[in-house]
Image 1 (cartoon, rainbow over the protein chains, first blue to last red):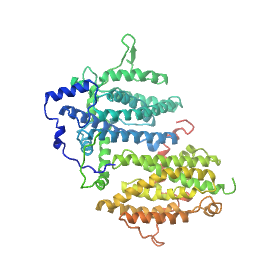
Image 2: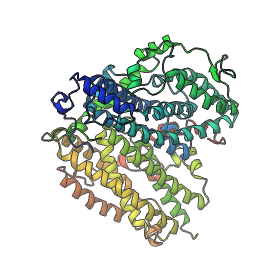
Image 3: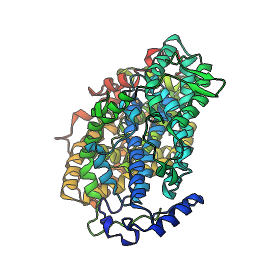
Image 4: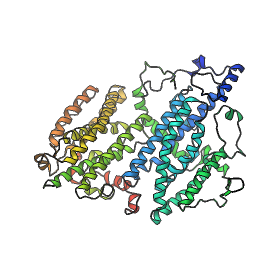
Length: 331
Length: 256
């Protein structure tokens, strides 16, 4: 339980962890530890930029979990039958639990949960672009649970080998749960794809609409994205966007085709010579436009989150104990 | 089964429909809770409620009724026997939390009483379910106490929620036509006893939480709370059922 409510000490008073000190010897030792495969823990010295990048990454991940709960969450009340209803409830609940885990991991770096959520609502902090698209039918939830969660697993398994201890440990737990989501999503897609003509049409339509966001999911092509060698050296980023996209295509395109579904990209094929997938380059201008607020659901997603925060404020206030002060969590 | 089968079925429908509808309502908090931890807690309890509903429908199925999905996803409101209290929209968290407290206290006592039921499948289920509902009432009691005593705003909100919810909660105990059969055949000790035990427990927690029990008497007893056990419902139930069955009814014969 969140005993102290949202009361935190100013991170600047945390001298032992003052990352603004530009100390070459400390930086060298820090990088040597990372190179040796050690994990960095909250009380260890770290460069200010490492802390800043990590906070940005982890909070964006946390935001993606709570915003991601919305498109699927709207189908809980419409899920067909007890089996699907219970599974979808548990699945979306897991996502909210992931947000809780990730906000806690980010808090170890000194940014309070409330500040992170405020930055989400104000639009200052981003979340995964895919959740700016609508879940129009029941089949959308199946495609999301299977393929978006599959993409997330590829991304997160890579990042769980990263350098920051609390984030890696959170990711390991998250991936275990996500693997159940993937099984649930696959099972759901299989039932639709092998069901009645209406069900098959529904799942094909969902796949057609979600393919573009799925291809966007791994981020801009390596050809155009700004490469940050420091991010790689500090093991904050563990795989390139294109490598992850290739891995996803390797693992899931054959499974999609096996179900008799088609993928809306005439260029999509495996190049036997290189072992790489050819595909139509995703529209990165649209990606940028959506991430900057102009997608089909950006406004609604943030409005819903803002409404939930505002309506719940009296509850959070009632949990605060004024005499308590926040103490940096250990991990 | 003896001639009390209809009475048992009626009891099972009332209980299962209550659990299904309140579970459905509480699941609407998913992603929208006042704090992440509560979001997760409400979802857990909603999942339990749906599980209990499913188990109760399964007993009905063993007594010759349709399977659980058909019972839950194809009946219209006239054939539902839930109380009005569970049908209301979730509104603000104060209303949902107070409903959770009042409903789950009754649900816990009911299942507790049913552990001695002469209907063996129900007694067996009650023994299992009791262990889960214990956590629902623990959760409710802690939150009622915390919010009743925390700030002026939280106290006023919880008192207002209690004043509104309490008369509606009395609809939980609306008797069916089978009341005496259930009592005489040892299936269930009856709504009156349940209500008496409930009133004692609820009063004690309410008073410890810096809240006041509403003054309910024959004169101001709300008639709005009653009718659910006979198939008469609020304007909120049919839209809920329409939403719940939206996908299922695309093709009820399909496997989803």
